[in-house]
Length: 402
Image (cartoon, rainbow, N blue to C red; front, side, top):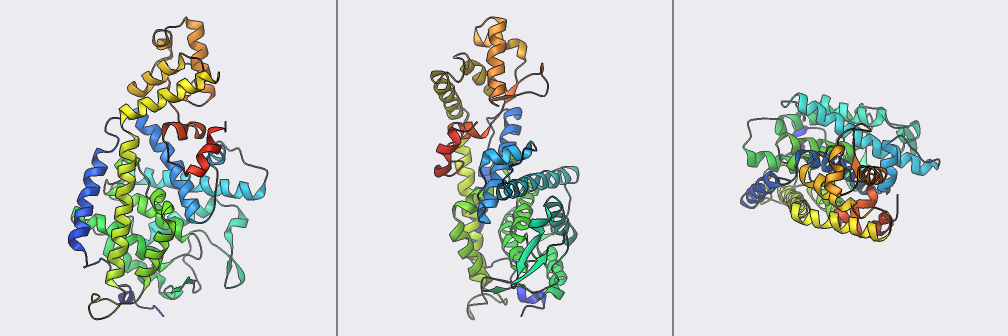
């Protein structure tokens, strides 16, 4: 029965220190170069897309499948009449909105104390305030219980084989969590390893009756952003963790275990297990950075955008001249509508029709009917522009959605 914060030690692994530091260096280098060829406008739109990606894969980790097009509709306030589908839409929208709020707080206050118990409770509160009443009701030890937004749990819980700390001591465990990971004097390498270690330890504390996985992943996203390892928001840890879901849970569980013997560190919990989880987590993040770096290579992205435009033209879904405008917007970030005739080589009326067709399909976006246009990434085009961003089993379905 965990009742003393010392039972949560070690807070950082002592094993594999050289390997972990080498991975940290690779993460710093890879993240710094990510998206460097994109225009600022294009980068903003990719970041918006990655928020949807983050929500989709966070849902998937929870075992909840939500179609990307339904997430898009939820962001427009268009909810399904099917109760089960509507609930998943609300869940996805809440994740995206809370991520936005958290990023806004961090942008306004770069010194924001992400590890503070109050901040973690705020995250939980913001997420559950967006939830309908039916999603605040959970089964706990065979009895229906109500989740109170932002409130630490008031009962004991068991997650798999792990018996979480006694509820009356959760506050003390969170204080130790804050002391271990909230320090700003850490070296860059130690900060990165702390992202991985804190991800496990927060899940291990299980501070809330429900929603701990979501709070942990939102917290980790913000931690990566605070230490400037999020690649300007251009990669999502949740995608990597969801794609290795079984391994993710297995490494989490292994790090829950007690010390394996006299050679397994000096704490109560396994040092080796924590090191192995950190190594898995960091390699998963590095894999996502490598994947997105390849995906966002401007020359290859341009080829895929043009390939889609040609295919859509052959299907009579878009005018042939649409390819010229899409390429120009990709390379420049934003284009005044008045330049459409020159770019497409069309008369003004025909050029307006090209713009209208692209806006209608969500391929171009604008803040006003006469304002400049920029790229949009609706779900039906994502498999063409960004192959393998979603599971292959979903991509064929997405290509036919509108």
